[in-house]
Length: 404
Image (tube, rainbow, N blue to C red):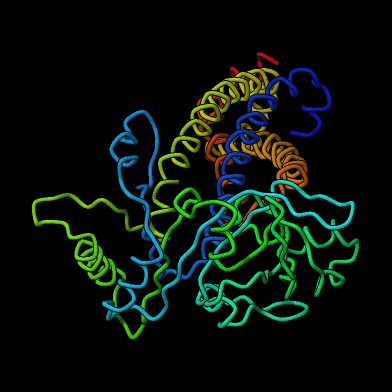
């Protein structure tokens, strides 16, 4: 009966479905994208061990209230400080120096720009569990000597040599004409806007080699410290690091820290307000659309009740009870909203495919989001149809039949 009613009044049905479709499309698309973003960020941040702490200059954060003027005066961390910290730490298992720069890589007549230079100390490879896909890793003594040896990312190697595996053993030119020999090829990671380390577009080198291109203080230096495990909480590691760094920098008890201690949890916490804001905006737009859609569904249900007044009277005359009439119209209203929701979900599915192809990470609709969409449709349908259904259920059968 519902389908017959929809076919008979196509324009009216379309206008009623439109609000529900837009509402479901808005909220489910926002939830799907945000959920996929959170998953992608967490997966990529998990490439940094959760017990890893970064010692640097800048605190996490941003916005108009961010006191950049305060942090810019802080000194950059140095290799010498890393060595002193390494000697004094008890709870840490691995510590390394990390610096980065954007530069070019040249071989023969091929040039690749905007390549990430990662200048690191010897323990970076073990901290990040890096194993060369072809060739070999940089040896410890090569790190200590600052040899002109590098590891090259898959996409950079593929661009320079057509076949990435051909890169091993070749000598390439870096920024300022520095030459380096490729010891190994980094495994292909795939592109994602949320990659913590964009290894495919990077080269890894000893920090001494990077220092020949640019002073390390201008290469965003930081010290990476990994906890020793054995049940030692991250908070205790950070507390020890704070005490050691204050000692290394000879800060008096009354002086503020002139360094930052950042971990993976701190990175994710900075994203929470952004994600919450986008979610709130999505729910607000969806709420308006659903309210408009709800009024449209209620309107079509009132018209349906009016058109079926005679049928309602006949049903009640032959024994149909109020709850039967009530259920019939509530089910029809819910069905109308579910139909609009399914159309909205189909549009979201198309959107996820387009977004996945455009921004380089997978966007999908989880089972929980799908269940939420159906639940919203059912609730909206019941709320929209409750008044028309009650009106139909309360009709006097004699009056209803006479009005036919």
